Image (cartoon, rainbow, N blue to C red; front, side):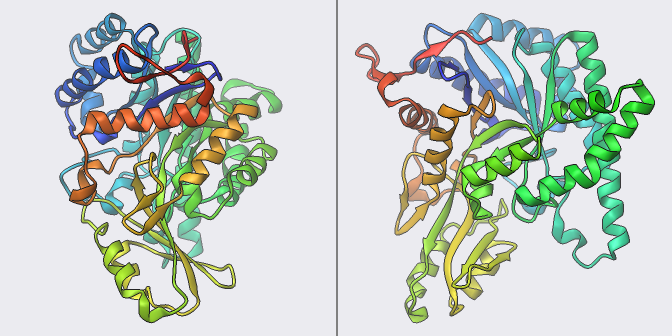
Length: 426
């Protein structure tokens, strides 16, 4: 939905199982019309669309894309952002570090992302920028033991493909009039994890290579080429991921903005966290609580803060639990996208406050037009925390709306649900 603050708000459909287009479309039909009726009955409602590589290929076959476009128009729904991070299966199987495969060193990742951009350009409303979040180039642990020359080759190959993508997006804009940006999403153990690594990558790799390529292939002036790279390769600021890097939102935003990097999308998500008791012998019960979140589908990296401020990373929660009695460890933050609307989880806490700070910040400085709730772990939550999915989605969005604009989020007597103060998307 388009908010009076100038943001489009939705949730990411990666929470729904389904890798084929038929499965994806069935989920969209089941969840979005009822949700729109409750939250935005009189105005269009946005979708944060996740398509696997398979679904993206199937959607372009026959008349499916036009049928989808017609359905969107009939239902007063629109797609403004897509999640192009998970390429293959994302539910009911072990995903773990495979979520990064194929990475940006491959032509498969490039072709998939171009296909998503082609689809988005066709269904994107006039006057709305489109965004597609993507992986942070690759997965860092794959290269920890490699020689520096091989790591540089990874950066170089990934950059070549992103520069090729910029050229494709410029051509797409010339043909369709639609502006689409790819939003790199840093996360723990990604090749890009935090604002410092993102800024270094832009300054040392992406901008030099992109400007040179656009000058040569399109005859652009240096300033024009520089602006084109920054327009089409932006940042996906996942609040959970930056909280895991222990970066305060306002400080991260200031550094990113100072570097000239644009934020294409803010993903509203929360991580688990806890202060560790000083008496290490009392941490057994805490370990048992954390162990309930150690499941086999997704990576749940742990970032530990020591009493000296140093950060230690563990690749997954099951491994980290072996170190929970480390004497100088004072805080754990765990990559588990927990629901936004509560701050406590059976003795653990979440980084919900970071989301509150982000929402307050963008009321003064919008940063982006795209807001997307990304709580994708509903089916792997501990059993006593699971709720009916449609009601959970509604609670997530209502919590965002009430936090962002509490005075404009009024009770609707007809439905019993809160309705957002919305405007027509533009």
